[in-house]
View 1 (cartoon, rainbow, N blue to C red):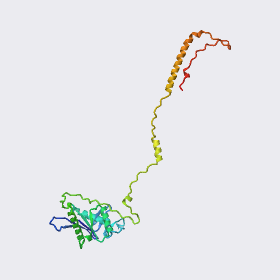
View 2 (cartoon, rainbow, N blue to C red; view 1 turned 180 degrees about the vertical axis):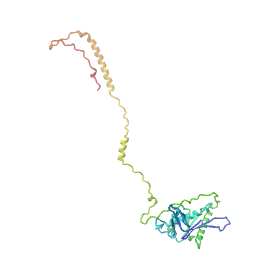
View 3 (cartoon, rainbow, N blue to C red; view 1 turned 180 degrees about the horizontal axis):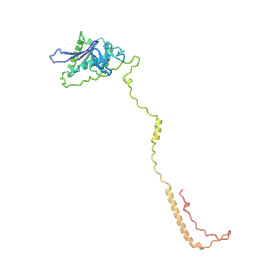
Amino acid sequence: MGLRIAEDECIAAIVTSGGETDETPESLYIARESVLHMSDEGDTALGGEAPPGHTHSITGFVRSVGDPAGITVDDGEAYRAEDLVATAIFCLINLAAEHLSGPAEFYATHPGDWPAEYVRGLREALDYLGLRSVVLVSDADLPASEDSRGHARDAARAALAAVLATPAGTTPPDPTGTENALVVTDVLPAVHAADGTVQAYSAAMPAAEPAPEAEPAAMTVAATVAAPAEVPPAEPKRSRRTPLLIAAAAATAGLVLGGIAAALLLHDDAATPVPTTGVSGRAEAPTPPCRISRTAFTAP
């Protein structure tokens, strides 16, 4: 397919191979006026009357290629002329999709006097719309022609030659229908205002920043209050009071037994009179045997 976007007309020439004996393949032409009708939702139609809902009509985008100010649409946003030319190429390919079968090549022509930056701008616009397979060809590299159809036809023949030079060109077309991937278009990027700073997409849409972390001190206090650190239980120590109590109990028992034995021995002498005291003139009561109370031994 050869594509030509001119100031007054946009043409797509489709050339197919009719066989080895077909020296001059017949060309199918699709022509539209160089006017783009755009809707507020971003849908675009090429040429003819504006469809319902397409309230913005744009012309003159071919001669405006290279103008950094772009083209203002109805006193609203401005669009780069290169993006509008790429959109016209997109629409032409979409219109011709039903006439294509099997492998295809797309060659789009541009004026031979375009400087390199104009060609590069159009190349970037095509890539943005997903048309990386479209090859840009200068009119100066094609045979001389008197009209736009001649340039489109020559570009289409060059595209056909490129297809036939590949193994895919000798493969019969797939009879099953293929889904047209050009139904949905991308929204054209608007030209930034002159007083604004141009930003790359990565600068205009920064990566999400992580949530701020709490202060270390606050986190420490909160962690201490909410979940205090567990201290492992200390190994139980053997009590020193146990052996002391046992020894005290044994000593007490021994003293009690000793006291009982002494009482039995002294029982026989209980009738022996005790000398009287010289102070009161009366006899004192017998002195009881010495006994040790258990309360005298307490645990230290």
